[in-house]
Amino acid sequence: MSTTLAAGTSLDFTLAQQLTVIALCALTAYISHMALAVFNDGVRPFLLDFIQGRTTRSATTAVSFGLSAGFIFGLGAPMALSTGVLNPWLVFLPTDILGMLAPKKWLAPILGGAWGAVVVFGLNGANNVAHDLPVDFITAMQQMSTPILFLFTLFPVLAITKQFGRKWGA
Image 1: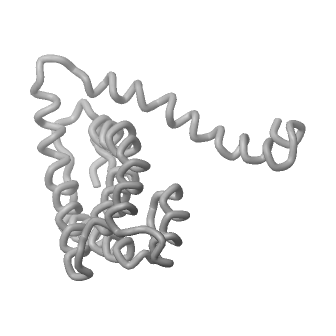
Image 2 (image 1 turned 45 degrees about the horizontal axis):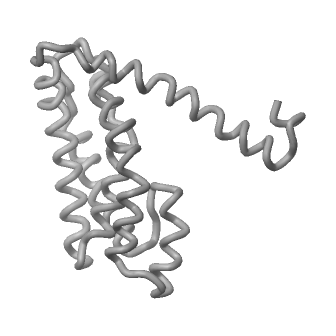
Image 3 (image 1 turned 120 degrees about the vertical axis):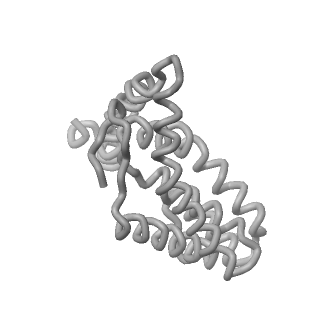
């Protein structure tokens, strides 16, 4: 994958990279549909309710979308557009949603693979369109995502502080 930043005009993926992303998206949508695994940690507790029949597929899909949409649109897409690098929030959170959304087992990998193709082939086009606009919002998005990345480093500190106290957290 190219390491071209937002200032560049091309995000090139080799054929092997394209096929890998598409296949991974198909696989992750399938295992999400089967309620075997999801990328979003917040959705995992709800999978048990779904597996045990206490909730429906559509309700679990709604929870997955609600917990993932902010990460997809607020972190994954801006980071991918501003850096040209695929990230798990953009690639795998939508496959969680699509896998749960699929009413049939055979449809989940098709939807996931289609998402992978959209990401692989659409990221370059979206980046080109963004750079053709009269206002450079890509740089602003990149600057918005920078503090979020630093805040992610606080999660382990907060967990340690909560579990073992302020001394160990510090």
